[in-house]
Every structure is written in C-alpha cells, then in structure tokens.
Amino acid sequence: MQIQRGAVTLLPVIFMSHLIAVPGTPEIPHLQIGDRVKLSALGLERSPRMARTGAIVGAIGSSFEVLMDGSKTPVRLHKTYLEKADT
Image (tube, rainbow, N blue to C red; front, top):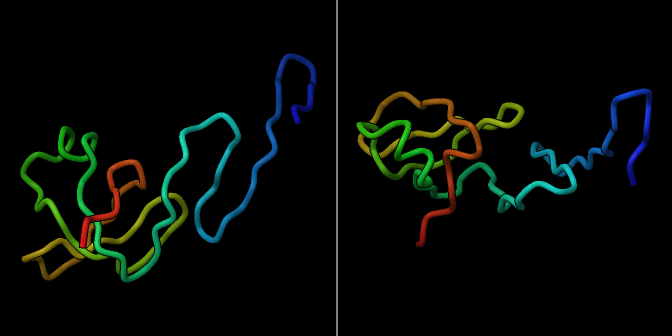
C-alpha cells in the first residue's frame, strides 16, 4: 500500500522488535542479543582489519553492539554489516 502526498510517495513501515522492514527492501534475517554473527561482504569490504566474528550484546535502532572475538569493548555496527554465523 502506497500513500501519495504531493510529489512524495510514503511507504508503510512495519515494526519488528528493534528492526524496521520496509516493503521492497531485501529481507534481513532477525538478529537478537546473544546471537553469534560474522561480518557480511559489505562489512568485510568496509572494515577489513576488524575481527570476523563476534556476539551481539545490544541493539540501538538499526545498529547492533557487537563484542568481536578477542575484544574487550563492543563496537556498534549497522545491520547491513552483519549476518548470522554458522554455529
């Protein structure tokens, strides 16, 4: 369903926990605190020196706080930089 307001088309937003899904965008798997994650292809390209895997310790908007393996301090990464790790 699209709503037309002048020259702007508004799309409905569906709230799912701490993630926002907009129709027409690629589906992102649901991530939650405690999940093991790895850097996606985009994450590897943009952060080549960062550790490859870690655990989600917090969520803020469309980003996650991730404690990367071997680190003492979590880093905040956008959800497009992450994907679920094979366990």
